[in-house]
Image 1 (tube, helix red, strand yellow):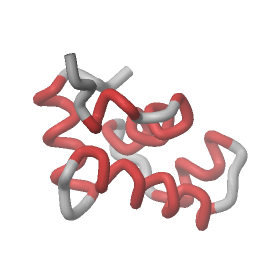
Image 2 (cartoon, helix red, strand yellow; image 1 turned 30 degrees about the horizontal axis):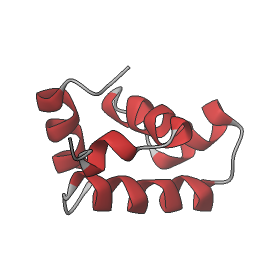
Image 3 (tube, one colour; image 1 turned 45 degrees about the horizontal axis):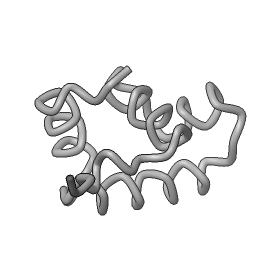
Image 4 (tube, one colour; image 1 turned 60 degrees about the vertical axis):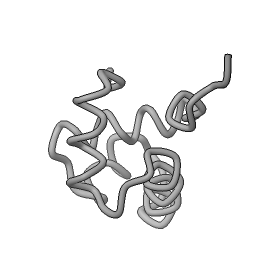
Length: 70
């Protein structure tokens, strides 16, 4: 059975997505995960591509719909 793109999220991408669903800003996510804000942006770009969405709001909606948030 073919794995969906969203099923290929890395552990770190899932952590970032979980923070995003919680309503955190990029800066707050970076602080919580002890990474640079630019790294958060890179993870978000990967998440958007894997979820096939254009932005953070659509990523949150799709994550909740698919039940893939922690």
